Length: 613
Image (cartoon, rainbow, N blue to C red; front, side, top):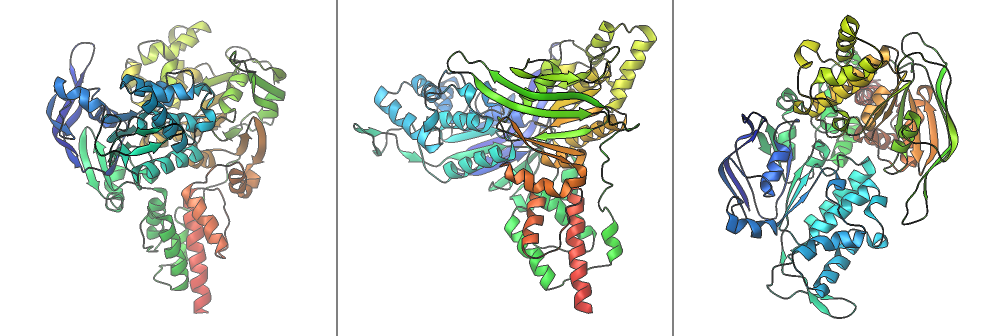
């Protein structure tokens, strides 16, 4: 059991001043429980994970994990054999040269005999579907496979408590579903502790029986930004400003739509859809966490009409205007063309691996292009080739016209904080401008312009320390640093990773404003809701090849193309497809949540009108 009473924790800044992160937090988690923790950026989620894992220690208050106190040196060593921590980015915790050695690493540190180590390794590789990668380098695995390896390496040691700090934030929807399936499976099975020696539990290996330890229930703490993931937990705890803001079962917590929105959070997509339909006079019963129940409620409502106000209510918040795909001064001129582009990474341990194969693509002035694909399909490599960070193995990248002053392409990396190399916001933004010859009033004007484009006031942010900003603010400052040099094409590689809903909305608004100002954008993202909302053209990359290149005029075919690529649609579009299978008349329109609400409401209006006639 985990018990927290009035926890406090503060960081210290460079001057020694205290920066409170956890402020009087209390909660309890029963043995074998599965709790989800959500909250806006800066609410204390990762700090809490590090406290539970014994990496940080409370400033005050009481924390007991399985009856052990992390602050006690005598109990700390034992506690660290009971608690496993999974980071956001698996690359931050994979340390070995092969998959097998990675699983063995923790077991070696626990001092297990070789025979027992082999038994645990074989179990972990089989349980997490990694056997075929036993002798591969972890660097050659996809994002989902790396995260499975990180979990397997921890679970091989038989922890009693598993702490997951946003383990799916770097994965595509398919990879997320894969990890959630793993968590569901291991949560329903007893865990065998490496250092426990209770009742024998023989493992029948190929040579002899080996004791894997006594079984016990796994207690899981899952920190996430995805409300759909929190729906899988027995209990949800919402944090805000270092305190417990709400707690309860998923249906209880996500029924509090206004309080959640007041701190920048959102309920699951189906919960938002339920609210939109309610505003249109439709009361849809069922829990937003249960897609099947939601679908059943809609089908039942179509057959047994409950209540509706008028068709005029349907028009509120209906489909937005189709994006044209071009900013101001529409111009079909090409910025960049890729011809028969191929690329191989050179791995001295094995033969070169082809990442991109014969890619043909062009991007025109004013376009907003969404690029999606499964993890490992070559999206980041493609962005690096266009920006010039990599050179193609064959084929070529051609820019169609000359540009005086400044770069043609601006690239925002997956981790924009790694792009910063100056202390303050203004210093980082003007660095590139100074290299282009700007000074004095012109330099100040461009600084203010670029910050305004990303909705950050120059007066409030110019002198701020870049590493003291929130994740969302850092993303926007990184974009401003590139926009200051006026690139023709802005490439963003997974800009929404690890952002809370409020920061995501603000970033999407900034991108729309930038595009309307005439900058072409190539957006790479696993967030299909954002891709569908912002993009006027959809490109799908799979196994290094373009499998679809679809304009906005063919938007109705986007969902099918997404499914064919092996990706997962947003919940509201999956619901719409299921309703179509039930005989509903469906038009996907602009693929937004509001459009789905309008489609559902119009079908119910049509049913009621036909019944009355």
